[in-house]
Length: 157
Image (tube, rainbow, N blue to C red; front, side, top):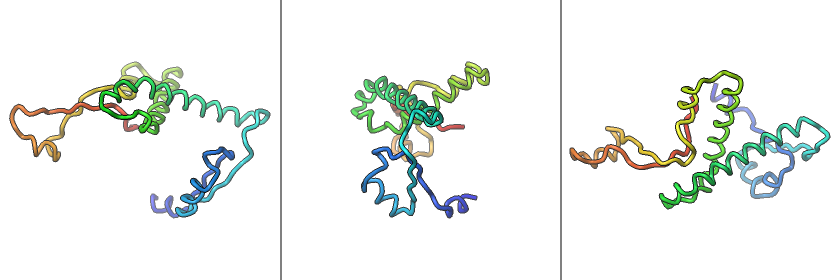
């Protein structure tokens, strides 16, 4: 099934947004065999595009909020949170899916805690797996069993 999906042509559809115009985007797409198709730019009279643009605006707002709230934690690790914008966007989408599921009564509080264990960029510890290269180098009795880290995403189940 995967080889079948890969062998099919890929086409990117856009609304003539500036991020999709120009050689910086077109040349890599052409080199990868990806076709581009454009539609008319957003018009408020069409109705349906308004819903899509509203969803895009919500996703951007959620991503920006996640980045702003995570900034102090990323600074502690000497990282620029903006470099993780794609993870912030994915985490924001997960937050929205969870919110919608709760509003429909499809998800209980315990499930929310499992889906969203902490805020984007939250500090925490990561358990060192026994077979990892890090564990093999640090095998003393009192050595750390975890390292500090930042939450940048959750694997969707």
